[in-house]
Length: 321
Ligand SMILES: NC(=O)c1ccc[n+]([C@@H]2O[C@H](COP(=O)([O-])OP(=O)(O)OC[C@H]3O[C@@H](n4cnc5c(N)ncnc54)[C@H](OP(=O)(O)O)[C@@H]3O)[C@@H](O)[C@H]2O)c1
Image 1: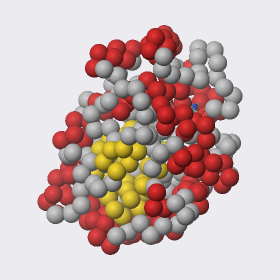
Image 2 (image 1 turned 180 degrees about the horizontal axis):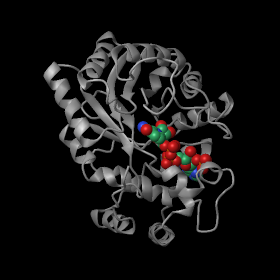
Image 3 (image 1 turned 120 degrees about the vertical axis):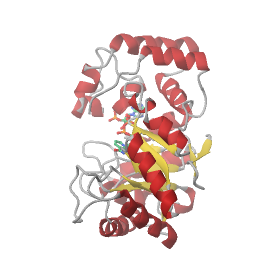
Image 4 (image 1 turned 60 degrees about the vertical axis):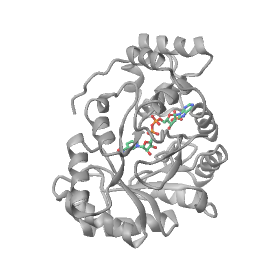
C-alpha cells in the first residue's frame, strides 16, 4: 500500500481508502454490524488506514458512523477517520443553518459519540451553506481544531470559487484552512478537471474523489448485458448501466486485458496518477471487494501516454447541474 499526506495537514493516509456509505445501508451485506465489521477488518488487513463517512450515511441519520465506531473499537490508533456534517439536501435532527457555529458544535458532538472517539481526524463540510458567511463556518471549525476535537478540516461539493473564497477567508482570519476537497470524479464525470482541480492545486489541498468507480460500473462486473442482481446499480441505480457508453467501456476493458490488468486496477491507477489525488475512497459492500480494491490501487500506474489513451475513451463532457 502507498500512503500520501492530505494537502498541508499532518494526516498520512492510504491511497486506497474505504468509503463508508455502505455501512448501515439496507439490502447490503454491510447493513448489519457483523457485515460492517467484516468489511472494515478486511480493509485494515489490506493496509487501508483511511475511512470516510458522514453523519447522514446509512438507513437512518448517524447509522454509518455508529457502525464504523463499533467496527474500529480497540483499533482507533490505526485508522484515520473522516466524517462530514451539514448536507444541505438531507434532513438532520439538529436545527439551524448547517454552516453556523451552533449547528457545527452540536453536529460534532453527535459524530464523536457515534464514532466512539474523542477526536475526528478530518471534519468535512458536506455541501456549501449559501446562507452562512464562510468566515463563520471557518471560525467555528478552527475552534474545534484548537480544542483538539478535530485534527483537520475539509470541504465537499464546493465550486472552484467557493474553495478559493474559503481558503482566502482562513488566511485573512489566521484560522485553520481546508486541507482537502471531496467532489465527484470518475471517468464518466471529469468536470472537476476544468476549474475545481486547478483551484485545489492552487490552495495546496488534497483531493478525495467520490463515486470513483461510478457506483461500481468501473469494477468490470457489468457488461452490455450482465448486471449482477445484488449490486447497487441493479438494485437502485439501473440508469448508470443503461446510460453507460458501452463501446468506450469495451475499449477500456480491452486496454486492461492487453496489459494483464483488471478494470479496477486501471481505474485506481488512472485516478491516483492525477494531480492532487490523495486517497480513492471507493465503497465496498463485501470484504473481498475492499481486498481487491486495496491491491488494485497498490500497483499499476499509467504512463502519460496510457493516461491520455484512457481519457480519449471517456472524453470530458461538461455536465449541467
Ligand atoms: N461527499 C459527497 O457528497 C459524497 C457523495 C457520494 C459518496 N461519497 C463518498 O464516496 C464514497 C465512495 O462512493 P460510493 O461507494 O458510493 O461509490 P463507488 O466507490 O463509485 O462504488 C462503490 C460500489 O461499487 C461496488 N464495488 C466496489 N468495489 C468492488 C469490487 N472490487 N468488485 C465489485 N464491486 C465493487 C460496491 O457496490 P455493490 O456491491 O452494491 O455493487 C460498492 O458499493 C462513499 O462511500 C462516500 O464515502 C461522498
